Image (cartoon, rainbow, N blue to C red; front, side, top):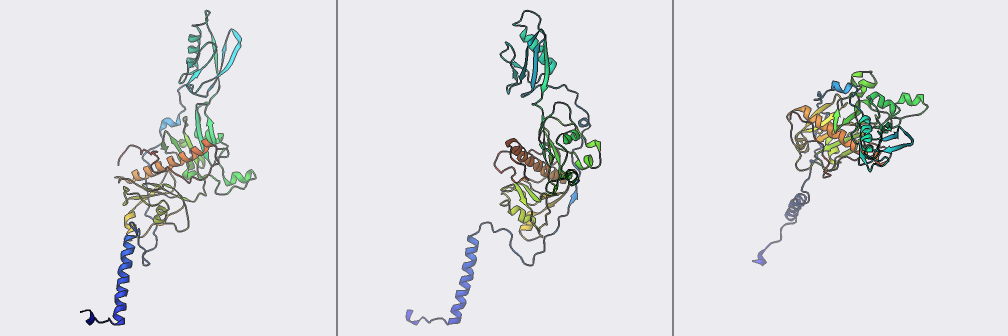
Amino acid sequence: MIGSLKTPPPLAFGRVCWAFGIALGALLSLSGCQHPGPRFDPRAKKAAPPALETVALTNRINSEWLRPPTNLFTLGPGDKLEIELLDDPTSKTTATVGPDGKIYFQLLSGLDVWGLTIAQTKAALESELGKFIRDRVQVSVTLRAVESRRVWLLGRFSTPGVYAMPAPMTLLEAISRAGGLLNISGGRDLGFGYTTEETADLRRAFVIRQGQLLPVDFFRLVRQGDISQNIYLQPDDFVYMPASGAKNVYVLGAVSQPRAVPYTEGMTLITAIANCNGIIRDAFHWHVAIVRGSLSQPRIALVDYKAIGKGKIPDVQLEPQDIVYVPFKPYRYLTKYADIAMQTFVSSVAINEGSRAALGRESAPAGVFIPLGSRITVQPSTGGR
């Protein structure tokens, strides 16, 4: 009966309310966060340094890269020719190979010379002009400027830019063409006060050819005079000299926003990946690669990110210029993780620095990398998994 119900003692009633509040708070905390992330544990161990292992690169300097190319120069868009009929001094004119690969001279409506040598171009002109001129035609063709063959020399050069390559050019010749490297001693000799942010980092410099990283050791080439590293460049080769004082951690691969994260004292793996909005769903959490050191002799560690997130093992301490690569799938060999991490790193730097140069913007440390979903992909080199 209602009249027989007794009012609970104040102390018992308080305990009931306290228990109900605890249960309600727990329920709200569970329903309000689908991905709570790593739990904070004041007793957890401090971040530990990764167990790095030096790996050997899977590719080596090809002996053919050290020999000057023997193939003859062929024309392309932008190249400038001086053309003259030998029996008519007034016919001398300058013709530029158009974007369609054609030149226009005298009565010719357009002669396709893209991919032809100078001798082949001369023969083609004489053959086509012979259809309109009764007498035997003799043409003089002289190459005046090369615009179709260029190399990209960006980063901490004295005069970085895109340079024409009219003749075979070695890597040392290209560095000299760009005015040499920025360095503290050279800056003092010239009366300038360069900082470490502006000097070149030889251990992190690289060359990309047809989308692939070449195994060139710039430190051995420039500092030790090792000519075995002085390869001949090819058209469209990309040479990049990063700043020695750059303090970024590069987080790439299967993360929401791959990018360069400004390094802060005490930065850990969890912090760096959190700055990129975390790992995507299809990532392989168990083998996150941390690459450190020079690109020619990298050191790598594989870390179980999932175990760190669950608090089973300590977080990992990072250093400036570390490359963190979150794979989409597992690989069998450690060298494969290093190769794909470095390949993704250099490709993304090249895309960003190259776009800055093409758009005429001032060079700056790379801060934006290949965005997820941009359809720009980095194809790893073929080899063992």
